[in-house]
Amino acid sequence: MPTPAKAAKIEELAEKLARSRIAILIQTQGLSVKEMNELRSKVRPMNVEVQVAKNTLLRLAAERNQLADVDPNIFHGQTTVAFGYDDEVAAAKAIVDSLQNSNMVVLKAAILGGRSLTPERVEALAKISGGKPSAQAQLVGGLQGPLSTTYSLLTAPLRDLCYVLQARAEQLQQQQQTQSE
Image 1 (cartoon, one colour):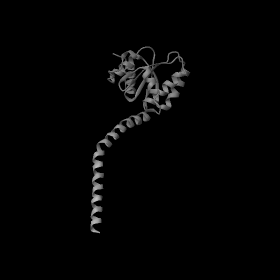
Image 2 (cartoon, rainbow, N blue to C red):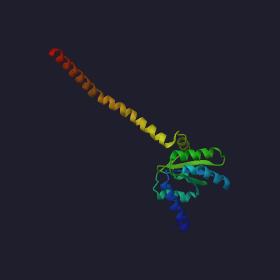
Image 3 (tube, rainbow, N blue to C red):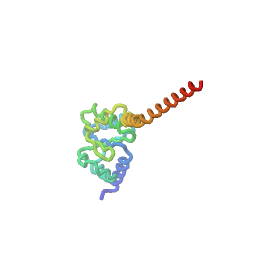
Image 4 (cartoon, helix red, strand yellow):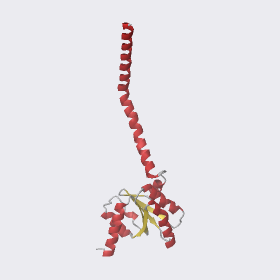
């Protein structure tokens, strides 16, 4: 049974995990307080909150949110969590960009959509140009193109039949006009 302070911390982490779109786990061991504050200030404009958390409490918070597909092996070593509340891509980009300037900070994993991501997948997510809206537009465009083509193919025979009937009606009308003259 956890102490009341730990139970409150588990509740806080569970609430943040539930609210966040992505939780990026990083190892910040060796960073000074000043460097940690700089990291926080760099990612704050992207609505990313950075917090040091104990692995056991973070694992219990993930279990409390029924994140069954999260690999329990990601909860090891010293862990700092970056909670991204708005855009998953922007949060990943902010963290990955911040990590490139530091030799001490290591990307461990992430939790996205109830599943854990490897560091490579987090870096790939950060490389999506234009962010989440651009990725969504590309997806819609990718779906819309084939659907538009299919619609055109299915409606072409009916449309062509209408054109033939209209041309025949105009031809008959012209023949009537020439006969009546």
